[in-house]
Length: 326
Image 1 (cartoon, helix red, strand yellow):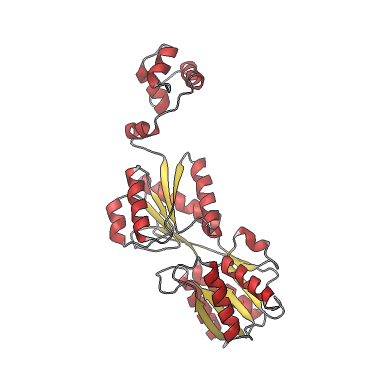
Image 2 (cartoon, rainbow, N blue to C red):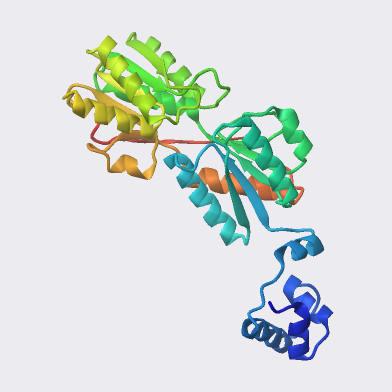
């Protein structure tokens, strides 16, 4: 049978409450006695009951993260930084993939509350704000502004879209396109599209915009749209992709159609995820400060948990990385 707290107390010759104080780091225990109790735990292979400890301390040191899919490189990098930052602050994470499924997202919200997470970081939102209010937990969103009462962290999407478009125009492009996610969704990333249109109009450059499917994570959908773009407008000479993943598929189709990058067509992406530097050719992109977004989102959540004031709007600057596709 697994060792219990009573077994530890018996082995060391102390009462159960003394062992409990060591487990929960409460009250004074001499260093020598603490060492004996911890050594007994090792020898007996004692595994603390985390649920019981959480109930006792009223603190789980767990946070929940809900994203559309960890398969997308942007969310994978973001979650990697979040997990690392949480670990360094002695927190554990529970990662949930919503797949943009309303029922699944609601189920995860209720699951996280039932498992006593101390707060939630959201990169997905298919349910209405009232559902979040029912959860009554500290909440921070990234790249989504779902309420003026809920803090969010984002890169500067408008400025990012502007510098991407200005790069294409500055490199001599005069017939440009943007491939973006669905503009019907209330996403902060739609500001990239706004900036693209504004910059094209400002410079008197011909432009067109194509949208992916509603949630924008379907590679087959990307390639169909790219082929459609080149079929309708074979003389397109510049494309701004709203993500590096879409940009990578553009480079693939350009290779298939023997369109030379960057001499015939220039491509710029958005996100600055790791593989953007190793595409063929290496991709020019607007790099989001992914690590900084993760750290700020976590810090905002911790401040809420500790009942400290926070700013609801948190926008971080991007960086233009000019590589060989422009």
